[in-house]
Length: 64
Image 1 (cartoon, rainbow, N blue to C red):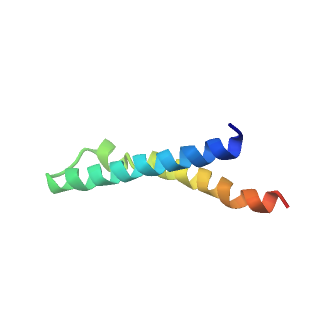
Image 2 (cartoon, rainbow, N blue to C red):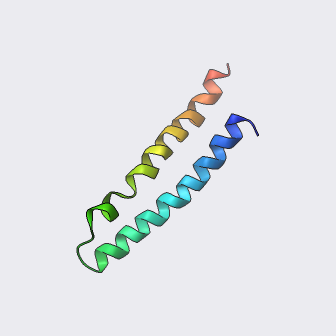
């Protein structure tokens, strides 16, 4: 598997992880004051999504 396919697959899995952490965040907030690690848990997948998304965005322009 080449890098582009690997990054694309990673991006897909990260989007699922991000969505689950955001849903868990809303559930925890509905139950009361959540701990800090629950509130900040979506940030890591979000930043990884940012970098993988930027890579996929730039890839067609870099190939020219």
